[in-house]
Length: 43
Image (cartoon, rainbow, N blue to C red; front, side, top):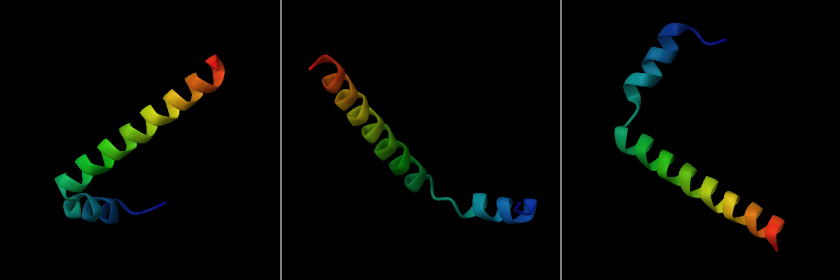
């Protein structure tokens, strides 16, 4: 387990643009995975 001050230090170093980029990339990967699963099941 990490100490709370380490967690707070990480939170202060986060760049909002990095968080947004990571969210968009994760969403794109999730959507592509869903499309592949649907194609596999239907086709």
